[in-house]
Length: 205
Image (tube, rainbow, N blue to C red; front, side):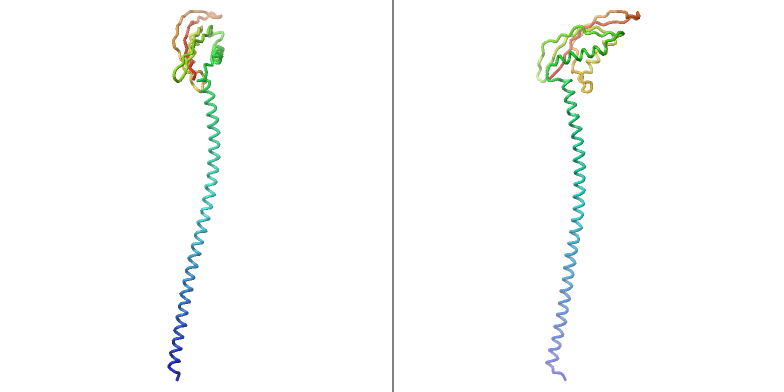
């Protein structure tokens, strides 16, 4: 019969082996859980990194597209700005520009005057400039002979002045005096002719 102390030692050794095995199992499970957790974190980080790369690439593409669109709009805006500044210089010039104004009147006269409808500017007299706080005025006195139709066109010309689209120097009528006469053209058709003296204010910066 085995010695009692031997049995106790054997049982104790068996218990220690079981305990060691359990401990190893627990450590193995803990290591597996730890490894899985770290792998999962790494995988999630990789997924997030890939999403971030895709998002950054999309932002870069969108930024490049918006930059190109902005450059296109900027070019259009600069072109429009230059055009407006150029038109503004004609409509509201930085100086009295009476020479240019005279040329405009001559051009207007040439466009209106015809064999069937009279429009003649016989005299243009520029008077002393009047300076105001934010602008200056160039008074102009003109003697004109024209048909009723052309007289109305002249008034419309002055009335619509200041338009950037029309590029007509900003003006207004200060006073006007009229004389009427009847005449006949070469065909014998009677036409009412208006002789008028008009005082105009032409504005500049």
